[in-house]
Length: 94
Image (tube, rainbow, N blue to C red; front, side, top):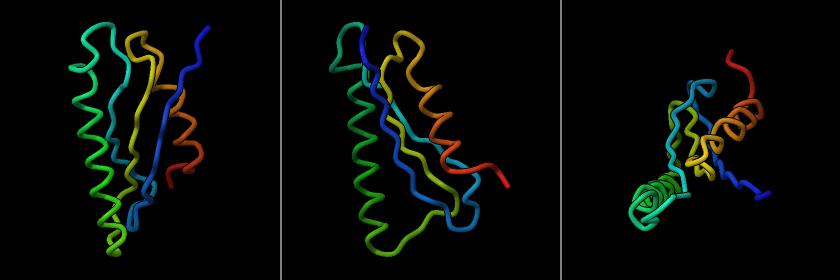
């Protein structure tokens, strides 16, 4: 048995915090791991870095942004459980 590790970060929306924008990518691959999925992971990390710079300047998004990096996509089980838990922590839609 192997541990599946999912990473989620959220940036709370200012005007519509109960509406979500999801940005994400999986990290596992059957073969050619540098092509799939690491190009998407590199883009996700750079987007995250740029959001951090905007937040430092006082920017806040209209809707809540959830950055997702999940494991076990190739087995079809990585994103769903972690995302459901993250959304429940953020609270119900109002």
